[in-house]
Length: 241
Length: 241
DNA sequence: CGCACTGTTGATTCCTATCAAGTATGGTGG
DNA sequence: CCACCATACTTGATAGGAATCAACAGTGCG
Image 1 (cartoon, rainbow over the protein chains, first blue to last red):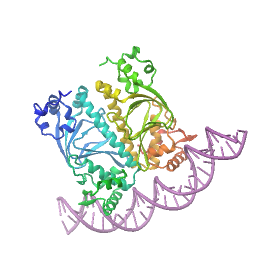
Image 2: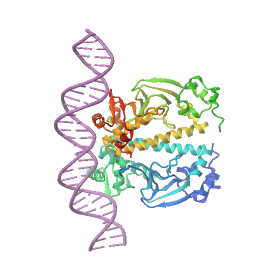
Image 3: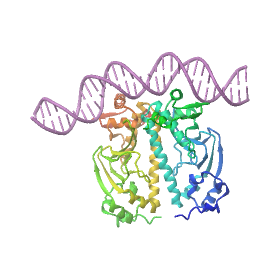
Image 4: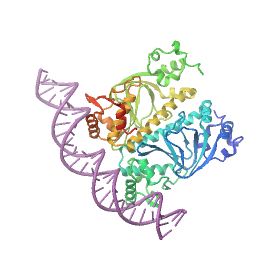
């Protein structure tokens, strides 16, 4: 079972992949050197400005991606323009909905980001031949499902205050998984995005930030930088006892 | 690739499985006769009264299940008792969260139901050896993820009226996939459950039912039986143009 | 400097929750 | 058989939280 990944010696791993931080966290970690080489022939890295769209709701999926750096938001819009963010993906997550030609959601960079694209048909073929890869994608789907259901509780049953606190807690715990100190971070989303994620309006989000600040649950600098002096206290405000 | 399933002749398929309607729809459809026989040695069918718990939030997962008949609700509860239904599963869905020992949600029968249990370790072992089976579970996870994200839009951005109409539309399209006529059906959930699914109170749900009834979008008999004269009209009330 | 954009704060409205009462149905036991 | 009770649902009155409408502050940019 350990025949894959002799890459301790980086034997035949493509150069770009060798330098890639997402290689072990993303889907690439389960691939052999040959498979990586094959996939690499068709893959391409792209830098995305904040707000750049990776794919639009209803469009045909041509690429899957790995997020190398940054945060990508997944959104759904109603015909009249109402919008809901249904997921946030952080590096080095896989981005895409396997086995479906048409995307039910749109994906766009929430922050300045970098992604690595693979053509859909290439990866789909690779998945068919590589149970390890399907397993990896399955795990990712299950993780996203768990997160989606957690968020359903937040959307359906929490107050505005609890929603905002839940969001801050989510960001604190996801923005930099490497870091030991989660008590200080930059928000990857604008107030408008946060509102769309929480099912609130911008104004309500802003008011709740102010309230949390006045109660010394958080400190805010330059609108985007947040410090949490007591993470447990934030968690209590989020309704997660 | 077509060596599996010589079951056109029902050669060596276990008797219970042969009579099982869920065999093709559930996970069992991808298994060979031998695998079915093996799995069948450890599986057991159970009848569930409405309200019976399959597994509780935080409990250790010992079984996966196939839903043979009925509707199962997946719920999350907060420490103070607030509750949210995060998913509805209909026969012949697979029920369970692969690869996790502890359940993050509870599952209980919404209607009188019947399920077929397999021990977790038996199925986990089978999954490792059977890429087809993992693929099937992967597909199921992705389906649930799509549904969860659809519902997030409903929870976050729709009015009470739209939520109730969305719920009715969901049930109409899921309760009996065989049936051509989706315009008449029994609700599998009580008003309290519907409220927990929609992030509303019982009273609000009741009022919206009354309103939709008075606007002739639906008819209701005996509280549970619903008739929809014009499905497109219901869809418009649900905000799905 | 003026303009666009993002975010905050205030006043008011409106939708849904809450509190409360009432109806309908079914089961139980005297 | 019927009085009694529990449960599920509906309806009404009121309260409260978030949305809406509006004004204003801070920042970056051409």
